[in-house]
Length: 273
Image (cartoon, rainbow, N blue to C red):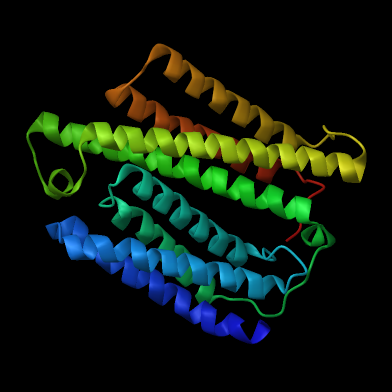
């Protein structure tokens, strides 16, 4: 399948670009045909993306060997999470925002595609690959939840100020935005939680301990625990509306900041690129 890497690499931005155009038409004028076409093309793009990763890995290693591979994996994760939420909620107009991110990420990854790669030993272990994939999917889902929170915030502000522009015309109702963001946060917490558990299991296999003295691991675990605690408080207190949207947005920024701090201030036994 190695000969298919480059054709897939060219095809992916095209498919995501076509998906973005359909979602853009659907958002702007509510064209139902475009609304039905967009997720179908998106499914095709995701299938091609899976084939690309399969060809890239050559069934020998997890296909994230550099930062552009990571960017492509994040693009895949965002597209997949959006499709799940759209299929669950029946609402696709917000797709124009998420697929625009996917298109930019994948176009950048394809443009700077690296053919001369170095395979770290970690990438050949399936457990480590599952850990990385679930972690990236989890963080992507939490980011989507934060964007839904921002959308809710902006739409509620427009309604309050009676400045009903394109955002008001194209967006789904506030309660639906809130439910979509809540679903995304649940998917993110579950996926990230399992990803971290797989990471600890791998650490035990390699180092003989579930909790190695690694500051990056500690910060990520604590950040996830605080995020989970925040979600539980929101659920228990039944926070909704603007308060919920602001907590979702600022909570993710704090969470992402903790993860970036962990990457900058600490080296890690599982650094591989």
